[in-house]
Length: 172
Image 1: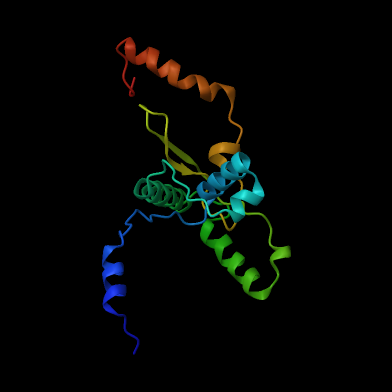
Image 2 (image 1 turned 135 degrees about the vertical axis):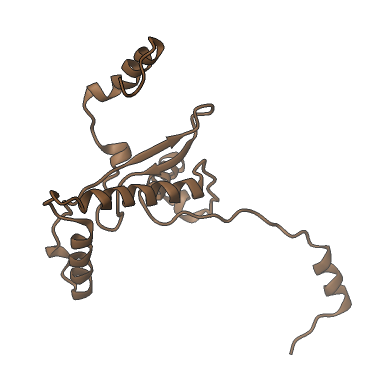
């Protein structure tokens, strides 16, 4: 057994202990977006080699809630009696099988129901939640940031705001 002398002990006790939040996000579309932003800001070599600590506005707890909620609602829709399309569970099973047998090249793109969510802090504009799809391993397309939306979708908040100002309510 190794031991230290009194001087080493005193020096160790005098050191300041650094305590910080080590919350991390799992590898998903949110993390991929952050990675892309860092690379765009400092370049590939620096991003990979310089040991940056990345601080984001993503709220890890809210992120998990949003991911879980999206998955639960999509699974609920897939269980509807009239739903007759590929389900996440079906694709995940075939994906695992293809992965374990080394036949990923033959694996088709998923066609199960997808969704996305973005949560912002209205006061600061910070992104608190970013869910770009159901499963990063199956498909890396970020629906929250890359999907095109009809132009009419962008105007809906203004239409609703005007209606609310005129005394209408969501059930009108």
